[in-house]
Amino acid sequence: MQRYTKPAMLLHWLMAILIVAAFFLGLTMTEIHGITPTKLKYYSWHKWMGVTVLLLAVIRVLWRKANRPPPPLPGPAWQHKAADTVHYLLYFLIFAVPVVGYLYTYAAGVPVVYLGLVQLPAPFDPNPDWKKPLSELHEILAWTMAVIVSAHVLAALKHHFIDRDDVLKRMLPKF
Image 1 (cartoon, rainbow, N blue to C red):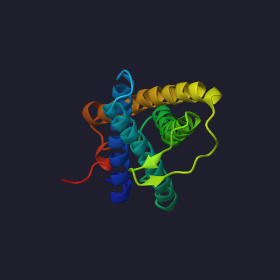
Image 2: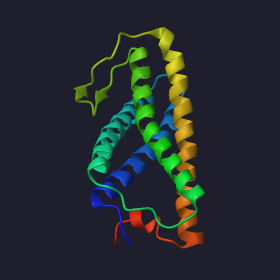
Image 3: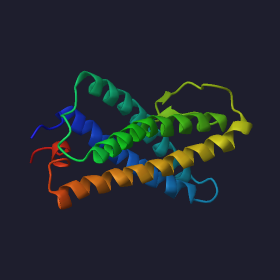
């Protein structure tokens, strides 16, 4: 069985954890009414996770360009096409969700200070007219990612438990 490289596995699982954590933190922070220290802390963490996902996504794309993934396992053409489509959508969303979130933050006039240390550049001046549409787009993209990630996970579990093939094992570290 040909496996993904260790760096590819590390990037995959680290990004998966961060994306799921950022999603649920986003749900939690938006349910807190008013401006509280906890809500502000959660917003900062959420932004830090988003910036980290974006940085890791760049590294992941560069790694994938330099290191081909293992060839697909035998299977129906429709499954390969579905897998390719899901992967392309995931890559698009891994970039789009944090970028739109970043733009929304600046439209709202709030700086992004990565890890509380480095203020990231403002792409434009605050713009109240852009705040709501960017917020809504960020939410739509995040929910779309949640659906696509869920399909990805269910497909991997189907391959592992029903088809009993090595699709999932190729992305898991050896224990």
